[in-house]
Image 1: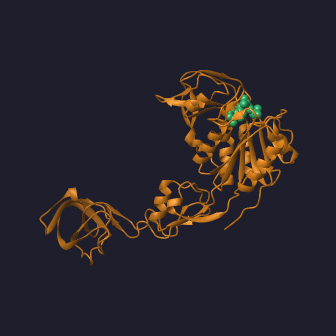
Image 2: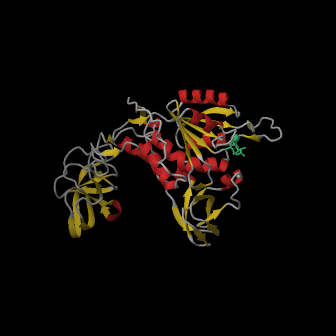
Image 3: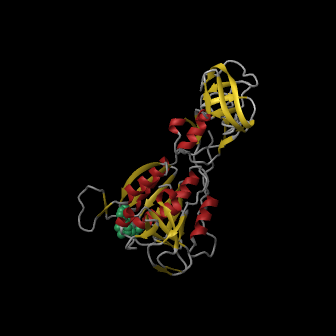
Length: 417
Ligand code: AMP
Ligand code: MG
């Protein structure tokens, strides 16, 4: 069990003199300043999907463990040149899991079935479909290279090879590889626990009765679900009105239970922006003005040793900021590698003129191989988030996009959501 050191209070500090921070610089700061805060545990394979590998893991057994045949056919020793061959058959056969008892002398062949360990004296297999047999002999045409239709011991992974590296988020295929190489359990990081809370006097619980001026809490279901998709343990800390004491209590509880905290709303510098006010009072608040649209300033801080991501209240900005900034940052806290979302360069099905100085993320989806964007860029339009399957990322520089121009499309899945 390893317990990493706490984050430094100033880990979110921007370099002096920086006003609007370019997205790449903000990301690179997060990458450099954050590190794993989770401890290590061992879990069986059936609990390992989506978990972060805690340290490099080596194969305990080679795969395949011994040479075997890749096809059904007849095995013999050595390759053969061009020509016609008739070899006497040994009685019996080699099947998967049921080896042939003895050696196969030179000049003889034996029946072999896919996955069977090659008997001594056999290193080459001729495919069933290329043979005729009378039960006593097998006849076929050469040439056949030595080793044809067989798999070498350890050709997939050899015992001792590192098969999974620290920081990897385990996929279904990784579990297959671990199982095949003799591992029934894996060292993983404890699941990152992330608290989610919404702030604002206007916010009411979905399903409750909402008076004039009140709106239902959209961000909490959004953020809890995003965290769930990222493989983290999301803790619902509920809604907090614009009341500093209530917020303080909730942050205290969240910090006691979780490795990180996501808040939405109240993160700007207004009268009712209590998240930023509290973090500032605690002396560990950084206001990140990232040159990104959609996005308001991000309030980043450390509350009782626990990193807090103060997201904008606006659901569109909250989702985009979580995907672009919080997701890779939380993955680092969870012990995973830093990941840059995989994007795809595809033709635009839209036109757009954009000024320099700010990166823009548009709600987008792919239809007929082209990127469509949502009809409105209104930052309160949750319907556009739901309509979209991902984002189009427009670089910091100015651009004038015409239909058919190449743009970068990033599906939600590339953000881990
Ligand atoms: P704020 O960042 O607190 O100034 O909020 C910005 C906008 O987002 C306001 O219109 C809020 O009403 C709205 N908003 C804040 N929190 C939520 C939430 N949890 N669900 C939906 N909208 C919200
Ligand atoms: Mg508010």
